[in-house]
Image (cartoon, rainbow, N blue to C red; front, side):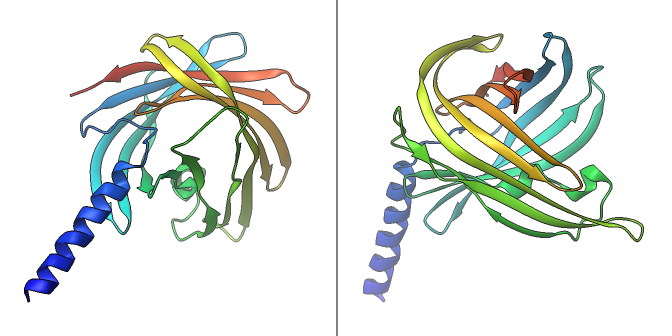
Length: 227
Protein backbone atom coordinates (compact mmCIF):
# COMPACT_ATOMS: atom_id res chain seq x y z
CA UNK A 1 0.00 0.00 0.00
CA UNK A 2 2.84 2.37 0.87
CA UNK A 3 4.49 1.79 -2.50
CA UNK A 4 1.18 2.46 -4.30
CA UNK A 5 0.73 5.75 -2.42
CA UNK A 6 4.30 6.81 -3.20
CA UNK A 7 3.74 5.98 -6.86
CA UNK A 8 0.56 8.06 -6.96
CA UNK A 9 2.32 11.01 -5.32
CA UNK A 10 5.21 10.74 -7.77
CA UNK A 11 2.79 10.62 -10.69
CA UNK A 12 0.93 13.71 -9.44
CA UNK A 13 4.19 15.62 -9.00
CA UNK A 14 5.33 14.62 -12.47
CA UNK A 15 2.07 15.89 -13.95
CA UNK A 16 2.37 19.22 -12.15
CA UNK A 17 6.01 19.68 -13.16
CA UNK A 18 5.18 18.70 -16.73
CA UNK A 19 2.39 21.30 -16.87
CA UNK A 20 4.71 23.94 -15.37
CA UNK A 21 6.96 23.62 -18.43
CA UNK A 22 4.10 24.79 -20.65
CA UNK A 23 3.77 28.49 -21.47
CA UNK A 24 0.11 29.49 -21.69
CA UNK A 25 -1.17 32.01 -24.21
CA UNK A 26 -4.25 32.97 -22.20
CA UNK A 27 -4.56 34.47 -18.70
CA UNK A 28 -4.13 31.90 -15.90
CA UNK A 29 -6.20 33.37 -13.05
CA UNK A 30 -9.82 32.25 -12.82
CA UNK A 31 -12.07 35.29 -13.05
CA UNK A 32 -9.83 37.20 -15.46
CA UNK A 33 -11.93 39.10 -18.00
CA UNK A 34 -10.70 40.37 -21.34
CA UNK A 35 -12.25 41.79 -24.49
CA UNK A 36 -11.23 41.81 -28.12
CA UNK A 37 -12.83 44.39 -30.39
CA UNK A 38 -12.97 43.93 -34.16
CA UNK A 39 -12.78 46.73 -36.72
CA UNK A 40 -13.29 47.04 -40.45
CA UNK A 41 -10.47 48.16 -42.72
CA UNK A 42 -11.39 51.81 -42.07
CA UNK A 43 -11.04 51.40 -38.33
CA UNK A 44 -14.73 51.43 -37.45
CA UNK A 45 -15.75 48.91 -34.74
CA UNK A 46 -18.12 46.18 -35.88
CA UNK A 47 -18.35 44.00 -32.78
CA UNK A 48 -16.43 42.48 -29.90
CA UNK A 49 -15.91 39.29 -27.93
CA UNK A 50 -15.96 39.30 -24.13
CA UNK A 51 -14.05 36.43 -22.52
CA UNK A 52 -13.62 35.09 -18.98
CA UNK A 53 -11.48 32.25 -17.64
CA UNK A 54 -14.00 30.16 -15.68
CA UNK A 55 -12.28 26.82 -15.00
CA UNK A 56 -8.95 25.03 -14.86
CA UNK A 57 -8.98 21.23 -14.78
CA UNK A 58 -6.17 18.71 -14.39
CA UNK A 59 -6.07 16.28 -17.31
CA UNK A 60 -3.71 13.49 -18.30
CA UNK A 61 -0.33 15.09 -18.84
CA UNK A 62 -1.36 18.66 -18.20
CA UNK A 63 -4.06 21.26 -17.54
CA UNK A 64 -7.24 22.24 -19.39
CA UNK A 65 -8.50 25.84 -19.39
CA UNK A 66 -12.17 26.68 -20.00
CA UNK A 67 -12.98 30.17 -21.27
CA UNK A 68 -16.51 31.51 -21.63
CA UNK A 69 -17.00 33.86 -24.56
CA UNK A 70 -19.87 36.18 -25.44
CA UNK A 71 -20.00 37.69 -28.92
CA UNK A 72 -21.43 41.21 -29.07
CA UNK A 73 -22.56 43.25 -32.07
CA UNK A 74 -21.39 46.83 -32.64
CA UNK A 75 -24.21 48.09 -30.39
CA UNK A 76 -23.06 45.89 -27.53
CA UNK A 77 -25.93 43.40 -27.80
CA UNK A 78 -25.04 39.76 -27.13
CA UNK A 79 -25.62 37.60 -30.20
CA UNK A 80 -23.93 34.33 -29.21
CA UNK A 81 -22.12 32.64 -26.34
CA UNK A 82 -20.10 29.45 -25.94
CA UNK A 83 -17.20 27.87 -24.08
CA UNK A 84 -13.69 27.60 -25.50
CA UNK A 85 -11.16 25.00 -24.37
CA UNK A 86 -7.40 25.26 -24.28
CA UNK A 87 -4.89 22.84 -22.83
CA UNK A 88 -1.25 22.57 -21.81
CA UNK A 89 0.38 19.19 -22.34
CA UNK A 90 4.10 18.79 -21.83
CA UNK A 91 5.67 21.99 -23.14
CA UNK A 92 2.99 22.70 -25.76
CA UNK A 93 -0.12 24.90 -25.53
CA UNK A 94 -3.06 23.71 -27.64
CA UNK A 95 -6.14 25.49 -28.98
CA UNK A 96 -9.14 23.22 -29.58
CA UNK A 97 -10.36 24.50 -32.94
CA UNK A 98 -13.79 22.88 -32.57
CA UNK A 99 -14.50 25.40 -29.81
CA UNK A 100 -14.50 28.20 -32.37
CA UNK A 101 -17.05 26.66 -34.73
CA UNK A 102 -20.30 26.02 -32.89
CA UNK A 103 -23.12 24.51 -35.04
CA UNK A 104 -25.79 26.56 -33.25
CA UNK A 105 -24.05 29.75 -34.32
CA UNK A 106 -24.89 28.84 -37.91
CA UNK A 107 -28.45 27.71 -37.29
CA UNK A 108 -27.44 24.04 -37.36
CA UNK A 109 -28.16 21.16 -35.03
CA UNK A 110 -25.68 20.50 -32.27
CA UNK A 111 -25.02 16.90 -33.34
CA UNK A 112 -22.44 17.84 -35.94
CA UNK A 113 -19.73 15.37 -36.93
CA UNK A 114 -16.36 16.95 -36.19
CA UNK A 115 -12.77 15.97 -36.91
CA UNK A 116 -9.88 18.26 -36.13
CA UNK A 117 -6.20 18.79 -35.48
CA UNK A 118 -5.55 21.36 -32.75
CA UNK A 119 -3.40 24.44 -33.27
CA UNK A 120 -0.28 24.25 -31.13
CA UNK A 121 2.07 26.84 -29.63
CA UNK A 122 5.31 25.36 -28.22
CA UNK A 123 6.92 27.02 -25.22
CA UNK A 124 10.19 27.53 -27.11
CA UNK A 125 8.81 29.89 -29.76
CA UNK A 126 11.55 31.65 -31.71
CA UNK A 127 11.81 33.84 -34.81
CA UNK A 128 11.81 31.85 -38.03
CA UNK A 129 10.15 28.82 -36.46
CA UNK A 130 7.64 26.93 -38.60
CA UNK A 131 4.61 25.73 -36.65
CA UNK A 132 2.32 22.77 -37.25
CA UNK A 133 -0.80 23.10 -39.38
CA UNK A 134 -4.26 22.69 -37.90
CA UNK A 135 -7.71 22.03 -39.29
CA UNK A 136 -11.33 21.41 -38.44
CA UNK A 137 -13.84 19.56 -40.61
CA UNK A 138 -17.54 19.59 -39.78
CA UNK A 139 -20.60 17.93 -41.30
CA UNK A 140 -23.50 20.05 -40.09
CA UNK A 141 -27.12 18.97 -39.96
CA UNK A 142 -29.48 21.81 -40.85
CA UNK A 143 -33.00 22.15 -39.49
CA UNK A 144 -34.35 21.23 -42.94
CA UNK A 145 -33.29 18.63 -45.49
CA UNK A 146 -30.09 20.47 -46.45
CA UNK A 147 -26.80 19.52 -44.81
CA UNK A 148 -23.55 21.44 -45.02
CA UNK A 149 -19.89 20.48 -44.85
CA UNK A 150 -17.22 22.96 -43.80
CA UNK A 151 -13.46 22.50 -43.58
CA UNK A 152 -11.06 25.14 -42.33
CA UNK A 153 -7.29 24.62 -42.64
CA UNK A 154 -4.73 26.85 -40.94
CA UNK A 155 -1.44 26.36 -42.79
CA UNK A 156 2.00 27.89 -43.40
CA UNK A 157 2.28 29.10 -39.81
CA UNK A 158 5.53 30.97 -39.21
CA UNK A 159 6.91 33.00 -36.30
CA UNK A 160 7.95 36.16 -38.11
CA UNK A 161 9.31 38.19 -35.23
CA UNK A 162 8.94 39.67 -31.75
CA UNK A 163 7.34 43.09 -31.40
CA UNK A 164 6.01 45.41 -28.71
CA UNK A 165 2.33 46.13 -29.32
CA UNK A 166 0.26 48.82 -27.57
CA UNK A 167 -3.55 48.63 -27.46
CA UNK A 168 -6.19 50.25 -25.20
CA UNK A 169 -5.56 47.33 -22.78
CA UNK A 170 -1.86 48.08 -22.36
CA UNK A 171 1.56 47.38 -23.86
CA UNK A 172 2.66 43.79 -24.48
CA UNK A 173 5.70 41.90 -25.72
CA UNK A 174 4.38 39.71 -28.54
CA UNK A 175 5.30 37.01 -30.99
CA UNK A 176 4.23 37.85 -34.53
CA UNK A 177 2.80 34.77 -36.29
CA UNK A 178 1.49 34.65 -39.86
CA UNK A 179 -0.61 31.94 -41.46
CA UNK A 180 -3.01 31.18 -44.28
CA UNK A 181 -6.61 30.25 -43.51
CA UNK A 182 -8.36 28.13 -46.14
CA UNK A 183 -12.12 27.65 -45.86
CA UNK A 184 -13.92 25.14 -48.05
CA UNK A 185 -17.71 24.91 -48.07
CA UNK A 186 -20.26 26.07 -50.63
CA UNK A 187 -17.57 28.61 -51.56
CA UNK A 188 -13.81 28.44 -51.08
CA UNK A 189 -12.11 31.37 -49.34
CA UNK A 190 -8.41 31.99 -48.73
CA UNK A 191 -7.26 34.58 -46.22
CA UNK A 192 -3.95 35.53 -44.64
CA UNK A 193 -3.84 36.50 -41.00
CA UNK A 194 -1.13 37.94 -38.79
CA UNK A 195 -1.45 37.40 -35.05
CA UNK A 196 0.44 39.13 -32.25
CA UNK A 197 0.26 36.92 -29.17
CA UNK A 198 1.67 37.41 -25.69
CA UNK A 199 2.44 34.83 -23.01
CA UNK A 200 -0.21 34.59 -20.26
CA UNK A 201 -2.35 37.06 -22.21
CA UNK A 202 -3.09 35.54 -25.60
CA UNK A 203 -4.19 37.42 -28.68
CA UNK A 204 -3.24 41.10 -28.55
CA UNK A 205 -3.86 41.99 -32.19
CA UNK A 206 -4.89 40.24 -35.41
CA UNK A 207 -4.89 41.57 -38.97
CA UNK A 208 -6.83 39.75 -41.69
CA UNK A 209 -5.97 40.12 -45.37
CA UNK A 210 -7.61 38.95 -48.57
CA UNK A 211 -5.67 36.68 -50.91
CA UNK A 212 -4.69 39.72 -53.00
CA UNK A 213 -3.05 41.32 -49.95
CA UNK A 214 -5.64 44.00 -49.19
CA UNK A 215 -6.63 44.52 -45.56
CA UNK A 216 -10.03 43.09 -44.68
CA UNK A 217 -10.13 44.11 -41.02
CA UNK A 218 -8.39 43.74 -37.69
CA UNK A 219 -9.04 43.10 -34.01
CA UNK A 220 -7.20 44.09 -30.86
CA UNK A 221 -7.26 43.60 -27.11
CA UNK A 222 -9.25 46.47 -25.62
CA UNK A 223 -9.79 45.28 -22.05
CA UNK A 224 -7.88 43.10 -19.57
CA UNK A 225 -8.99 42.84 -15.95
CA UNK A 226 -7.19 40.53 -13.52
CA UNK A 227 -8.99 39.46 -10.32
